[in-house]
Amino acid sequence: MREPGIRFLAGAEMKILPTIENAYLVIRDGKIDSYGEMKDCPSDQEENYIDATGKMVLPTWCDSHTHIVYAGNREGEFVDRINGKTYKEIADNGGGIVNSAKKLQSTTELDLYNQSKKRLEEVIQMGTGAVEIKSGYGLTKDAELKMLRVIKKLNAAYDLPIKATFLGAHAVPSDYKDNKQGYLDMLISEVLPIIAEEKLADYIDIFCETGYFTVEDTELIMKAGRSYGLAPKIHVNQFTSIGGVQIGVKYGALSVDHLEVMNQEDIEILKGTDTMPVALPSCSYFLSIPYTPAREMLDAGLPLALATDYNPGSTPSGNMNFVVSTACIKMKMTPEEALNAATINGAYAMGLEGEVGSITVGKRANFIITEPINSYGFLPYSFGRDHIESVYLDGNRQIFGF
Ligand code: NIG
Ligand code: FE
Image 1 (spheres, rainbow, N blue to C red):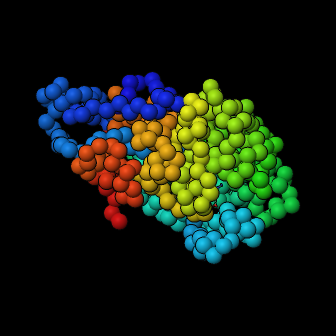
Image 2 (cartoon, rainbow, N blue to C red; image 1 turned 90 degrees about the horizontal axis):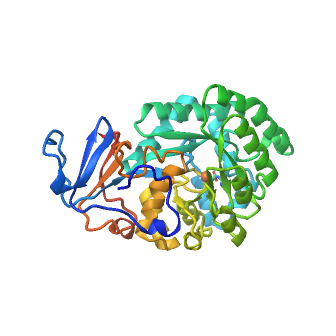
Image 3 (cartoon, rainbow, N blue to C red; image 1 turned 60 degrees about the vertical axis):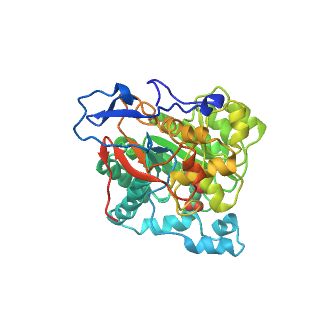
C-alpha cells in the first residue's frame, strides 16, 4: 500500500514494498475506502465479507505496453526462427508486422473485436487491471481507425482502464515501400485529424529502429502528435541504439519502451526526467535478444516499469506474472523492484498513477487475491504459474466463461 500522491518510484526507492501483515481492506463504491491492521478493522464491515486468511492482496498489474488488438497469429514465423531465420530476415521477406497488417485489413471490425476481447479477458484473469493497447497492425487509414475503434469499444465494455496509442508508424506498408515520407504524411494529414476528432487515442507511438523509422521520422511524428495533444510513448532501442531515447526525452515522452540495447548515454539522458523507461522481458525471452539492463539502470537511480508487449510477432503472451518472474530471474531485479515496476510505475507509464497501481485510499478497487502463499517472493520464484485466486476491478470480481 502507498499514500496518495506518489507518481513513480526510482532507483533505491524501488527496493521498498510497503506491506501489512494480517490486514483488512474496505471497498466502497468501487474504490478503496480504507485499509490497515486487522485489529483496527471497523466492526460494521460484515456485509460482502471475504476471508483472505493466508492469502495476499495486491494491486492488479498495470500493463503499459501491449498490442492486444490483432488478427490471426504468426506461429509459422515462430517455426521459421526455430529453423534458423532471424526476425529481420522474416520481416524483409514480407513477414513480420506487414504480415499481421495484411490479416487485419481483411478482418471485420466485429471479428477483430471478438478476437481481441478473448485476449483481454485472458489477461484480466491473470491479474491485469489496467492496460495500454496500440494500433499499428492496420497500416492503412481505414485499418488503423478500425483498430482504434475496437480499443475504444473494449474500453467501454470492460471494467479496467484502457489507454489507446496510435502507432500508425509501426512499419512502412508495401504500398509505400519506396515512399516512407508519403506514408508518414498520410498518417499526419489524413489519420491524425480523425483520431483527434473522434478521441480515438491518448498517446502516439512510432517504431524508431534501424530499417523501420529514423530519429527524424520520430521527431516528425511526435511533433504532429503534440499538435493534437497526444503525448509520445515510443518503441526505441529494441535492436539498435540510434538516438531514440534522446529524442523521446527531448519531446517529453511519457515512456520509452523496449531498451534491450542501452549504452551509457542512453542511461544518462533519462536521469532526472519524467520519462519512464519500460522493459519488456517476455519479448527478450521469445526472440532470444538481450534483456533490458535493469540492474544498471536502477543502480544509476532510474525508475523502470515492466510490461508484456503482448503481440503476435515478438511476444505472444500477456502474462504479467511471467514478466515479473522473468525480470527477477533474468534481469536480477528483486521481487520488490519487479512488483513496483509492474504496478505503480506501469500505472505512471499510462498516466494512470492517480487511479491504479497501489492499494491507496481513493484509488480504484482493482486488486488480486492470491492462493494461500507464504510471501510475495513466492510469486516470481514459482515461475510459469500465477497463484491468483481471484481478480477484482472496481470492486467487482471478474469471472469469464472460457
Ligand atoms: O513491440 N517492435 C515493434 N513492434 C512489436 C513487434 C511487432 C511484430 O513483430 O509484430 C514489438 O515487439
Ligand atoms: Fe511493442
